[in-house]
Length: 296
Image 1: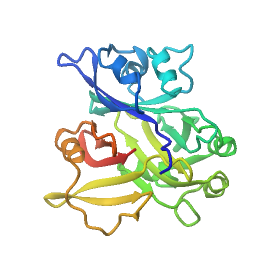
Image 2: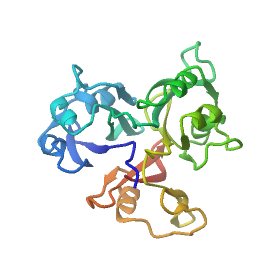
Image 3: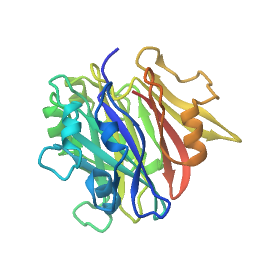
């Protein structure tokens, strides 16, 4: 089985008095130091990577932990983790959680996590969504160059589709005809699948987080998008690196992590080491519209 591009994930939840972020679990590589260090920590607004995302009310990319404001650098580097992205999840103006995705830095670490942004108050952006930041691993310099010079209108391309629909968009094949506007550049570096998540934040700004899988280092081993249908929830889209497409399987019984995420509208990380599942709520103006499950 290929090693996933996302090497670790952790969830931070507001304390009861909403003054701190407290560790609520995560998935880390075997024999990791990070969970041991993180369990006893908490972050105030603006502190560390989770606190920075909370304070800015926007996703944050940190490319290199060494010499930065990241507070667990020694443990992270010992675990082979050197960069990360923090994703705050808001319901209106209330923070629900902060999810942190960690990546490594080896030579075969291909793929991408991108942060796309539109600010209606910025006349330079107009009606376009542009790349605010991203992590591309070691083998995608050409693709990053193309991405930083690309913009999307609402409904166009992977970020634009998620922006327009206020819902996750999964493209299992980024070849021609998929609606992925950077298909040529993606194929050159082996990027083959894409997942876009609209970020629920206060205010008029729009953010979309995109995960792009490469052949050797998929973003996740399995991706599922669960949506409400009538009085129940069903698997709307999905792909497994060993089984292929999950579309049409009519799976109606989600994993416990997905069900708990659906019921709480908070991210949930499963504890099974063999098949860890991260369930992420996707909200639109405070309403839960989907649950995305990643098996790392």
